[in-house]
Length: 293
Image (cartoon, rainbow, N blue to C red; front, side):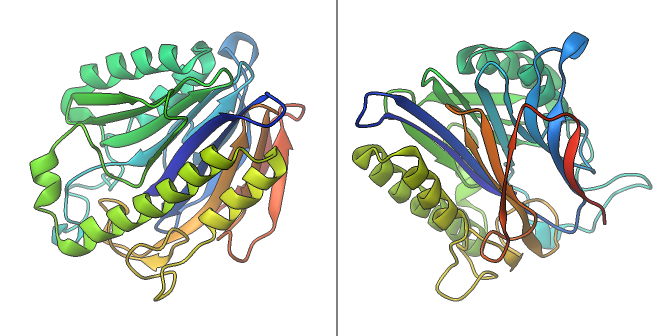
């Protein structure tokens, strides 16, 4: 349901800077930002969650591990008739948040989190909604992990220094993705290309942290030439193609940028093109902001 990514580079002073980002594109849904875990619950995290999803949708833990998720699947929402049974829903069988919460509570590096996610989603077989995940850590470890229907694939992007996804997978179901409607393919392809161009430029330029964050804010607030509801718009305003398996308009309900190096989460309540950015650290406890629908 999202455009996600991460970036790692040494700035001009030789300091390693690591950032992650996510636009949470959803049909109407409640959500929260705050801290999770700690104590007997494992490492604490600066986290984002959806009220309709158990666990953590994206987060940065106190050891410098970042885990960010997005939807992946080949279903055509226009062919969906909705939940098949009472109590069902478009998130039925979604264990992504629970698995990510476990990874953030237990793991210290992106490599360790990759192993845990592989184990959990291969065990899940048909039970889980598919996903693309970005895993990064404070030491520059960077992976993209994909899963669908019990199959998994991953990419080590540590040497490249950046990775992005926009609801597609590169190691799974290539033929099924190619058969999707043109609007879905174009939406995902345009968003990915837009993110990749910005990340590649940042990795080459190696700007100070404040400039990198400003560039990522600009990326997350960007629209397609025909507006926020059009194919390929990263900031979504009623987007209907390519975001999830739900046949409903999707809005960017929140944007997030994690400064992994500094241990901060910058976020919005609403679309980033018209919302104020807030900043959270692990010094607080509990829920910082919540939106109930």
